[in-house]
Image 1 (cartoon, rainbow, N blue to C red):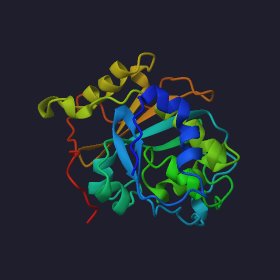
Image 2: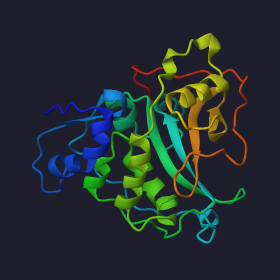
Image 3: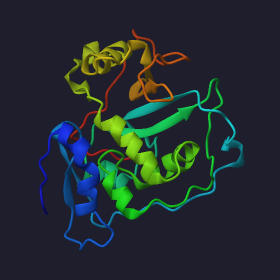
Image 4: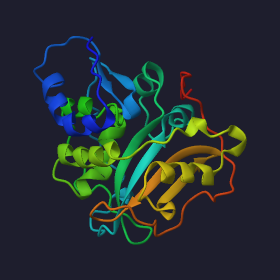
Amino acid sequence: MRTLTLTTGLLAGLSLTLAACELGPDAPSRGPVLIPAAEGATCDVPADLTPARPYTPPADEVAADVPVAFNMLAVSWSPQACRSGKDYPDERYQCAQNQFGLTLHGLWPNGADNKHPRYCAAPGPAIPVATVKQHFCMTPSPSLQQHEWAAHGTCGWDSPEAYFEQAARMWNGLNKPDLEAIPAQRLTAGAIRDAFVAANPGLPREGVFIAKTDGWFREARLCYSRDYRPMRCPRGLGAPDRERLKLAPTGVPQTTR
């Protein structure tokens, strides 16, 4: 096992090089590779990590002809995904072997109203194993990666590599706030919204949509223009500022059962 120590800024510039050197399809198996995750942390990329299989989406979810009006970067709280079973976690990799905080759910092209482009080239082809491994510490679930590429990536990118490279540029450029530093008695949707804005100058407060599940923080959906500039979310902000939320803890193995 080798440990790669990189700052977050350096990681953004070298992610593709590291992937080619460490995670190429012809590289010999040396066990788990430690790759830096957000904020200088590390995560184990399993040596036996494999892509998820392509799938045929429900016909009523296919919307290939909807124009893209803006984009959302959905930043998920992994402990909540694991405890609730939502957002397609792979329990073995995301919830048991590693203990993540903020991870990337996906980069979503959105329509101008409540109908969004989805499954524009269904079913999306399988993602190469090198690509799955390269982006595991960002989106630690092969099944979620496959879903995001099929449902969203095919509506704006020609390949999974192009889609995840764009998502990674945005993810690596985002400062991830320490949500667990917010006292539990002060944890509200507004406090989480403020934490993202304080960590990211230029991100408008009206550009942070807060999603919840039964009173628990689920994810922050950040709004961007078609050319990936932060913008106000055009259809509301989700949970209101004063709503109190709970935060599933990190450092505790979570299961979906």
